[in-house]
Length: 295
Ligand code: PLP
Image (cartoon, rainbow, N blue to C red):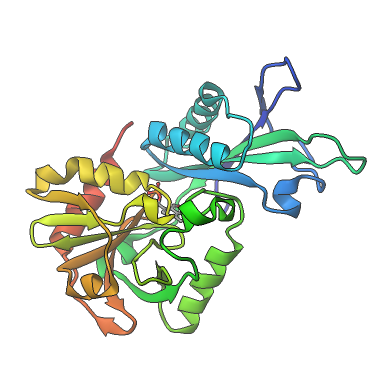
């Protein structure tokens, strides 16, 4: 089966020139081997879910793209141009219920002779995998020590905790460790014992009538999916809290989800091999809401 995919390059202008979009479907090569995105993972990205051609939480994603750029001392992305890129690709995927677009901004091509690299960027989109099983049956997770303290953003900002960088090799390695332990996904815990996030998701727990999630001050990515769910919580009769949470809080919670763009709300059905309750009704309501977003 061929999966439709679409690619645009965002060509950053040299000094004084505006950036522009180039349709790169038929253009080769698309990425230089000298690009530090390829050689060092030195860049940032966003993955935006698309529902029937409509980007979801696009403003929040663009703002977070700009935030990551600031954290990495990259040139500020021209958000109007990136919006245009996402909308153009989203439009080409409008026949599909669920798709996604990834935007990436690299520090650029490192010239052998030295000199300032010129930032390069691209936006790429395709159809989403089928997540029906994860969304209905739930996922098995393990808690893994991230090896960072919860105050890492303040003590060591150069570790870029909470930036969405292209260096996701560690996040992928954590998922492989989960698979070795017979699980699907990971909840990272700080060395001082606080819940952080998943490798590609935000933790949300329900405690009675309250949804809770850890604060991004702990060196985690501020989640756009969690933000949209919390903004909608009163429609399910729930209040919200952004508070530090511990593994004991996780075990005591009435329900737990890992939430993210594209997969949306995946209910957690076991933690470290211990089965836990899944709130099927609220999960279905959350995913219905997340999939139906048209902005
Ligand atoms: N945390 C990390 C480390 C992520 O990579 C992601 C998304 O990929 C999230 C949280 C969830 O963010 P969002 O809901 O904006 O997709």
